[in-house]
Length: 120
Image (cartoon, rainbow, N blue to C red; front, top):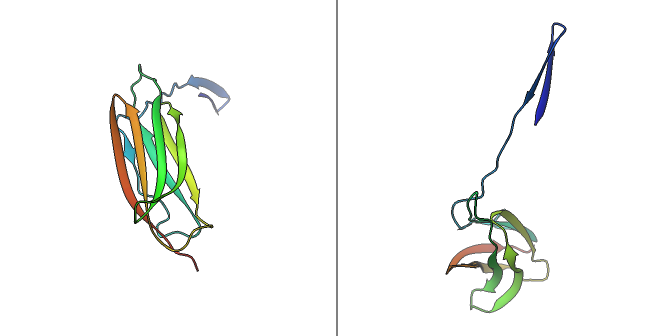
């Protein structure tokens, strides 16, 4: 980022370098809003380091409370970073749903969270 500051007929130029490091750990955050109608945002992080940008196989799926798979939102190899995915549930009925994220990079890791769809 470059800045130019002018004051009292004097000008200064300043350059600032900003580095954004990838997240250090795999996380699945609570969706928001929750409860929701008809869509919600699910955010998650894929870990890495400043020297390791290898891809991780990631799947994000929605399930009903009886364990039936409803929808797959993400099924791809992703670089380390911060991600958000929107789920539009306008075709589904009110109720509790579970979302699960799985990451395969070395050992497989899974996280589960619950969310509530309220249809009016």
